[in-house]
Length: 168
Image (cartoon, rainbow, N blue to C red; front, side):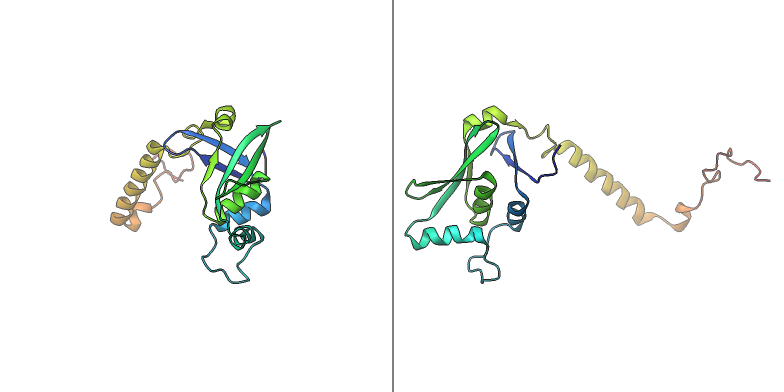
């Protein structure tokens, strides 16, 4: 187990996912989500400068990619619209990808090597979610009709005496 933040990259229309460890500062940036269309200086993050720089150079960021797995370490790249590739740490590429609202691709060879079942990890399991929702609805229905007497102490008050015994 790790205390590092994790990013769960889930394959579209499939049950496979890849778990990527993300450095703390990048996790905070990812958590902030996409940047505003016109951020003021207080909202602009270092990662935002990469997209802005690309535009000023006549390019735009097209996507992020997890391209390889070497010695149990992911390799990632930012891809510009002209095909230029900029290698970076996976957590940095993820942070820029999220901030710029770009697609993120994971190479098939990487998913084949370390992909896991998303549903087995607990993702989008409909059955427990439906059961929990039904339990919540049952509780709401009970509470709507409940009176204070419904919450009175039971006869044995949980003290181990048989019901109706003289406390004497």
